Length: 191
Image (cartoon, rainbow, N blue to C red; front, side):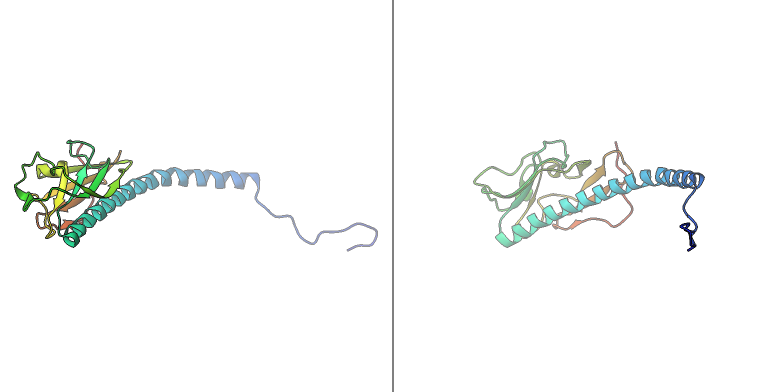
């Protein structure tokens, strides 16, 4: 410090120049332009995975309740007969129990009775769930008291994220009651 009121600054002012800031902003814009579409694909793939896991959990719950209660438990698609499972789903113990649901005609849902509702699921957004295989799976899936399914052959439910047909997932339903989510490559959804 000098005498006489004048102060000298031992530190030099530092920072970015305007040109350096513009270059950094341009690089950030380019990186964001590349990253955002990939991030959207990741979000869509995660939606399909999450919806598949949610449906798997609902079906496993219904199967375990059928075994624990020693009663027929049904998962019913309330969105109609088009095989789409992405809307409302109801899980209930049928009040009208029969000895063997395998002989119920494919077009018939479980007979009404004093049903005990176990769960109600509102549905899933931004995904489409479509049943393929046994005609019954389009409307309902019933588990017998021994945990087996009331279907005649293997069926699948395909989960497709909206606007992303190459990122689908699938659930495989077997008459034995086994429900599998294959760990293979994503399922291609057909339009």
